[in-house]
Image (cartoon, helix red, strand yellow):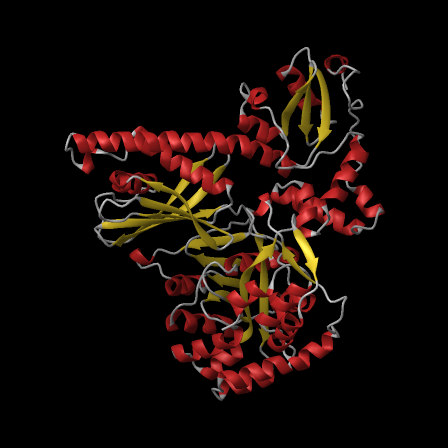
Amino acid sequence: MSRAMRATVPASESVQAPRYSAVNPYQQLVEQGFLQQEELVLATSEAVRKRLDLATVLMERYRIPKPAIGAALAEFYRCPFLAYDERTVMERELVKDLSLDYLRMNHWVPLRRHGNGVEILIDDPHNPDKLFDVRRAFPGQALSYRVGLRCDIERLLSVVQGRESGDAISDILGELVSEAQVEEQQNASIAAITENDSAIVRLANQIITDAYRRGASDIHIEPYADRKETAVRFRVDGTCFTYMKIPAAYRRAIVSRLKIMANLDIAERRKPQDGKIRFKLSTGQEIELRVATLPTSGFNEDVVIRLLTANGPRRLEELEFSDRTRRLVGELAQKPHGIVLCAGPTGSGKTTTLHAILASINTDERKIWTAEDPIEITQDGLRQVQVHPKIGLTFATTMRAFLRADPDVIMIGEMRDKETADIAIEASLTGHLVFSTIHTNSAVETVVRLLDLGCDPFNFSDAMVGVLAMRLCKRICPSCREAYHPTRREYDELVQTFGVMEWEHLQLAYDPEFTLYRGQGCDACNQTGYRGRVPIHELMVVSDAMKALIQARARTGELLTLAKNEGMRTLVQDGIEKILQGLTTYKQVRAVAIK
């Protein structure tokens, strides 16, 4: 540290002089047996790649308890650890002259005054730049430090900003109500309330910002007729909830504002439209939004906005496959030719999984072409094409072009018709590895669906090498997860659903030590007991015996029996295994995987 820097940090501050070293603050966790050294290295690289806090990765990916994380930080920084508590008293007067976005980006926050000093919560008490900024913000005052997790600092700031954002939303809605009343009193038309109104512009921006901060995947704008308020709903972890209501007089204006942001035709209200928005947050981060409008009753338009926040592909190790499934997926990805399909409903993680598989084989030796609608994830090394059906650039047309562009691997966003399926089969039979997604309920039903489309069973059976079906279940909140001993009825239900014969191989008898997990509900998960989602998978590898059944157009039951005899774990069975691991609950598995 420079002489000038040392002068800014008095010895009276209750933290030792900053000492930067290459030692990882969480090395103590390895020594205490919470995780292996290789896992710490993987977690560190994952945090860097995803631009996440390492503590978050350790807690969510490796299930390290927060108290253990806190103890490691306290030992490393020689500074008391403070975890988030809803009862923590934070003096808002201390942040009135500070930018909350600045504090969020730099991961520190003033907590309270004590005597003539200030107590600071910071993620790295040894960072000289941050200490200098703190000193500059509170000159001449004695400072004491506590170390905290970035996620906890974020939550403290969200409490403050949430109130301020709430006030801002209230103020904006207050303006809307006042203006709507004035318009009504003056008998002016609703059209006079325009999408360029300052309150509408700020409202649209605030809705998007709050959706991103809450981790929403979708925003739904739902206008109603008969002067009824317009509903705004967010989808978080697969579940919708009402975020706010907008005065009826502004239903056209808010929709028009969003259409302008997406470069759509605001005069056209009779046909569906779709577009994209590049939205810049106050932190400087830019996110992409996919916008779809649909005409609804009462001459209104609904708007559905998908938040596309993925910056790059994930690694196969991060997708929580079972050991067997991960090994088999890796083997399928190394095949020289054939078709590999990912099956499941919209939003089940098919595209994310395909990009993770492509990332694992994305080398200089392979030429990989993709046709997508839209391109949600980009990665270097892939040549990605956005299809445009309106101008005739369909999946089938793009596939034909790919075959003339010297491909090794081809990825098709969706196999939705016979023409695309036939070209994919042709490509695989001529020496190319083809990946695609399809909307079916299970791996076995995928085969029947493609045969029903009219695909030739002999060519199709030769081309198909594997089908991976998937779903997303709500994950038990790691902050409030608790173990409990289930009732005999719950145990029997698990056994029957998993399969009595298969359950015997697990060797899990109903005894006092048999344990399941559930979420109690806390602030981190909004009292729901769930936070985030966990995938469940079903992988069917097409063997010679399976090809014979496909050629004979066997029924779904026969295909399923053979697949299970060859070792396939069904969606339900994989889900129950993740129940036993404490990742999710039977209620969630039943909701997404049981017919």
